[in-house]
Image (cartoon, rainbow, N blue to C red; front, side, top):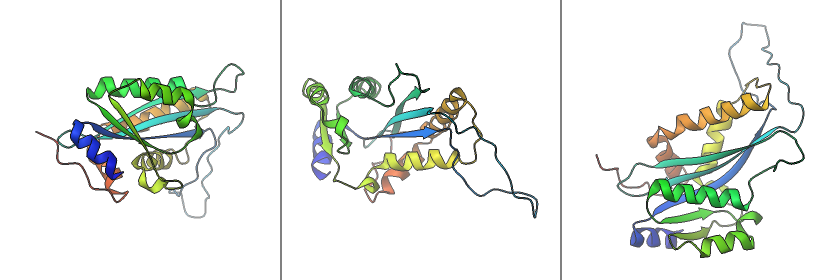
Length: 202
């Protein structure tokens, strides 16, 4: 991690933490208000194998507003659909981030097997603007993107989404709200115990 910060400072690069998660139609339970003596009931479908996968990047650079960049992938249970992000999807996400950030990237992510395939290694080697560092094993608390997922899933609690389209729309809505709250994205980094970036230029 310290090495990544030094490289980022030397190259005026963004430090981007990456992670993936998934959300199904099964609602997360949370407390809510109800008339005294009446237990609230939320009717949900929760059937089938519908899943919305999300890959996200929390991006930080001193002097710039922090950014949240993400992509979603909808799996409806059909045979020809991927169940999650594959190498080409992750590579496209990194290329999109580079285009949006307009600067080199120091990528920090975990040791998930798809992050270490020959295709991913070749893609990293072919991109001079990209440097990659791996988080320690079993250390999700060091990744601010984990806190993005926690916030997203908490805001979906008790949601009665009945179709894949409704679920995908709800996930995108929650993430889009976070994109406009740079202070919240900064807070996800400080919540890991890491120093926040310097304030953005006015």
